[in-house]
Image (tube, rainbow, N blue to C red):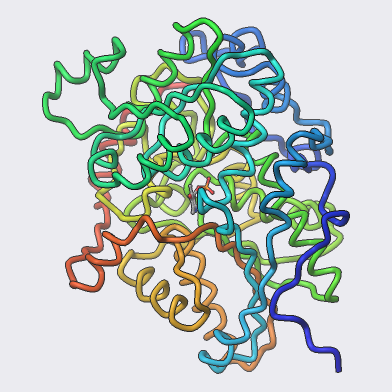
Length: 455
Ligand SMILES: *Cc1c(COP(=O)(O)O)cnc(C)c1O
């Protein structure tokens, strides 16, 4: 019997040449972005002061199934892709499960996560448009790091607004960004009108993602030659991240495997949207059936406890309205250590699919996530990011269910990144100083009461 290798790599030639746009095959398309003032669908011209032209086209295109990956981006991808699909033999053995467990590992690049897949594409299109630079926000710092790398490669200026608490607590991420030439400003700052206003109203605030978004957008629209870029949630980001799913599909085909369950963590939905893209296509078209599971933190449970409604994307309420599962744009999650999973909303694509019953979602408390993370690090040798460990936790749970029932299911999950910059979180876990924050129904009712009224 041919044993399936521990790692399955595609060759460079086998790496997918086009991104796949899942919206093209969705029966019910995601609801359009609305202008926050008029509540009418956003037009390309309205978005062009904020976003790059080519990216706006991708954002608004619900029909084109495949977008060729530009040669320049493909060359960049080759530096760290294709990424391996790993058979977790050691984990299977340790769990004593008859299930087969695979994970797609996206942490093998300096930025340490899947975010580089979209950062490189976005930087490339900005450069092609002749722009001088881009602005963005970063919370935990993974997106800012990825974008700094991509901007340095494509020779673009990069201004990052980093949530102040992370800026102070994560000096190492900040220094990686500066190594790649980015300017990193703690947010809120005195460099923008909105930042000054927030500082006046809340002196001593440590900032939030929504506030950093507002600052980065303000700088982009008020600086000639600059645009704003975002690392998750948007349709274009899911499109770029489809490389994860397409490679996974090709690798599984190579070893003659078919998944039963596909699991991914969900912050804004980009890695999960990318991982499931080709599998969801087959499910929608009735060609195959898979269980698809989104995993979110119990402290920020957009899918499992949020509302499917139009909401603001940012605290400053300057960004378009998106119809999504949301906890309300004023929702401030408790200080969960998976910084990448703390957004109040969710991709409109995944929101629609979840609403239509194509996927499931579960919320997990963070100490259980870190127990799974530690187990995984010891057994499989990779130190996982806290975000990714949400998927690990549920993959382990599913594998243990198989142990009970004796079913030989094939489980595939997305291992989105490494946890080397998250060691303060690991420290808290080891010192038993980690809490499981779970918002009360009252907390959620309060932030959901502020949803905009759209008829
Ligand atoms: C940002 C991030 C996530 C969550 O973002 P999505 O857009 O939901 O994928 C997950 N894992 C890692 C390592 C991240 O950096």
